[in-house]
Amino acid sequence: MVESPTTARIVITGTSSPHEARSIARHLLEEKLAACISILPRVESLYHWQGGIESSEESLLLIKTTTEKLAQLEARLLALHSYETPEFLSLAVPEANNSYLQWLLNSLHQ
Image 1: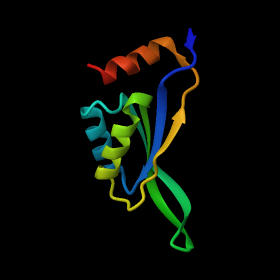
Image 2 (image 1 turned 90 degrees about the vertical axis):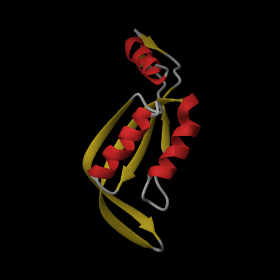
Image 3 (image 1 turned 180 degrees about the horizontal axis):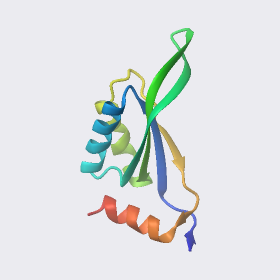
Image 4 (image 1 turned 30 degrees about the horizontal axis):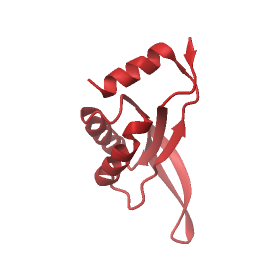
């Protein structure tokens, strides 16, 4: 069964390395700001930076959380991140499996 709408969110951020990604992920999980974090260890990012186009290898984090945790998560991510301007994109999850959603909520409130 699918619940709609949900308070679930997916936050996306890129990091400089798999090591930094794992470190940030562990902090966010330990602090109950995320229920699950998937790490894509190697992606190529092309972006505008300081008047030019840059390219770098990054690790991408897909952070599963809820709307009530977003402000705390953003503040903590900015404190932990090595980038001057870290990516923080919050995507709404309009529908989710009820069992998964319940697990996500329970994980953040244990």
